[in-house]
Amino acid sequence: MSKKIQAIRGMNDLLPADSNIWSFLDSTINNLMLSYGYKYCRTPNVEATETFSRAIGEVTDIVEKEMYTWKDNNGDSLTLRPEGTAGVVRMMIEHNLPREGIQKVFYNGPMFRHERPQKGRYRQFHQVGAEVFGASDAKIDAELISVTDSLWKSLEISAQLEINSLGSAESRESYRETLTKYFNDHKAKLDEDSLRRLTTNPLRILDSKNSDLEDLISNAPKMIDCLDNDSNNHFNALKKYLDQLKIPYKVNPKLVRGLDYYNLTVFEWVSNELGSQGTICGGGRYDGLVEKMGGNPTPAIGFAMGLERIALLIHDKSNQLIAKRPHLYFVSMGESAHIESMKLSKKILEVLPNITITNDISMGTLKSQMKKADKSDADFAMILGEEELANRVISIKPLKGQGVQQSIKLEGIIQHLQEIL
Ligand code: ATP
Ligand code: MG
Image 1 (cartoon, rainbow, N blue to C red):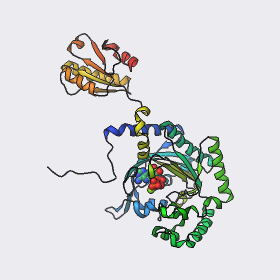
Image 2 (cartoon, helix red, strand yellow):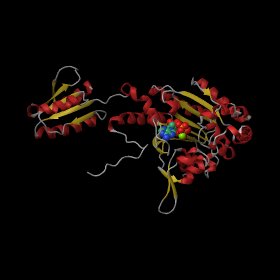
Image 3 (cartoon, protein in one colour):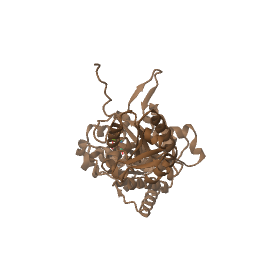
Image 4 (spheres, rainbow, N blue to C red):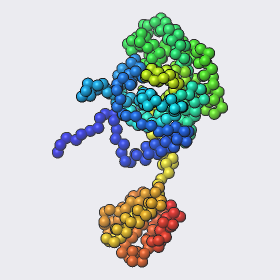
């Protein structure tokens, strides 16, 4: 026997037994985004490396060590997308979309990061993200947060909202100086990564996951205390909207997010049921990014949520959350009944597209087909033999203890199914 081939570590198959959670998540989120007026879009899984290095920032975990990058046959540097915003911004600019007015879009797809695989952290994972271009008011920041809040409610997930403001580009510059001075004064306590970031990107030190730096980071000057007037007003407006929407939040001055492009509002939703992989959604404003990527200055904001982590959270209650499709198991005996069962299934499904019919293909005896029907999760067996066919009837047998077997006229079958399903 030849050697078996295995999937790459951290890149998982979605097995048929688990796929109903994912279809449910996809359709729930799709519906929610559409209902708030967001339009679906899709960008390629592969982009020029520069799309990401320029957008995300050279001195970030993602660009420094997590990207899958290679040279294609022409010598061009390509990268598997590690996140969705950079590609959407590239798309907006390339097709001149912000010129047509405010753009509200969402995407859903795989992302790739070379990280250490563990529960809730994979090398191929899936995100749904939303982005809004052309709106600078805090009202849209609040709407985006409100959409995610509605999602947690409909999925019965409990998550805590943390918000912070990174201020304007100018106020961030003076904060950067204050912060550099602070960390310079405590240089001896910094680790290797932080020492490097002290000169390249000191804000990144605040994002460090090294617990030895916890106290030092907690005592560092806070961006939130250095906001200029406009940034303060924006943050206060956001808080007011959230209060009015009755969405509780915690201001977390240490929240800086792992990507370079953010300004003003940043936020994260954290669940305490997932250990250290507790962030299920993160987002923020990135007013400077469109211009940095070669477009006209355009305010923008977005979020991305990790579907694997959300799937983990709803796994145990998926039976309550996900409505089961009514399921019929079609048992037929004899050539004419096989043909009739296929014709009838087709007719029924044209009228009742939201049910499932398993048409038995084992061609076994009545007894063996019924055994399969009982083992399946079907609600009813429909039985069609030579005798039924001769009498133009079909037998409907409940499989879950709901009453007795009935004989129904063929022409009345659809109406009968509509009544019992
Ligand atoms: P973390 O701090 O957990 O590494 P992040 O800040 O790198 O998260 P973002 O880039 O903000 O994450 O991505 C948004 C969301 O995507 C995260 O909140 C998380 O739910 C999910 N996510 C990020 N990286 C992974 C991964 N490697 N595997 C699974 N989900 C992930
Ligand atoms: Mg990360």
